[in-house]
Image 1: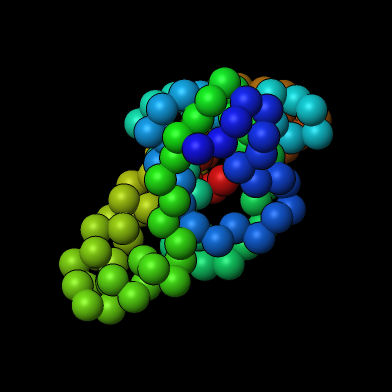
Image 2: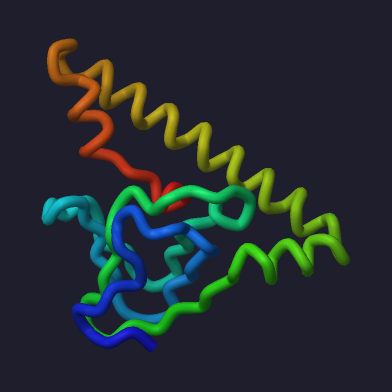
Length: 130
């Protein structure tokens, strides 16, 4: 359980696994700008099951929150025993990456050229990338 206002992670922390939000809401922000609110059932940070990177934003509990956390090490140990897990994750990440790219491209094309890169990167952050 994570109490109201406490972080699940901060921007630039090492991403070490995936979260599934069981109860409550999580607010995602970058430098004080709210980017999104994740609700019960949201899965975020799945890329961390495969690769090392730093979180691009912070995630904080809004109210009392329950999450399930799957570490990279646990996932990789289980996937070694059952390769279908790796294939399922790869399929999910690929589908989400395609959707994310389409959304970012649409945002980019809908904004004017001078400030499009700033708008596209700050307006849309895919939960998979958290």
